Length: 162
Image 1 (cartoon, rainbow, N blue to C red):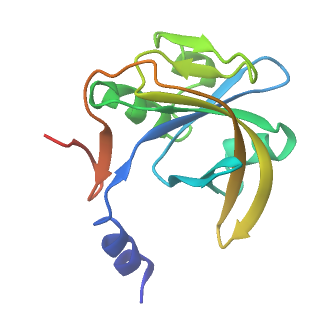
Image 2 (cartoon, rainbow, N blue to C red):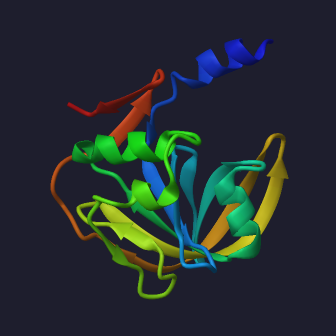
């Protein structure tokens, strides 16, 4: 099986779109769009995100245990696209015109208007091929917006349920 065949098969699995964020020690915000995100456990409350080895977020979460997740709504496609760009825009510009609040515990950006927000602390890192599975304990969770449906990713494009 080729990498392209595997990628094509997996592109048929629809996934919700989240923005994973963290605050670096030098007080710079870092964000990354992800679809490989899931709930792991209710007791204790755990979630997991898959990060490409050597990515800026993977490197940051190796040293910084606190991070946050914003579950993006269908109206936040532009945010997903912006944070999915690799090396085309500085981190400072990425957050420039996006409304967000600081997390109570992590100080990481939480996108206003997101369907749900979570603040997490890394519990475990599991090597998995060219990625690392980061399992985080959920420290706070909220549902700030009940408006609209989720943003989905399917067959290489952002989509909505409608």
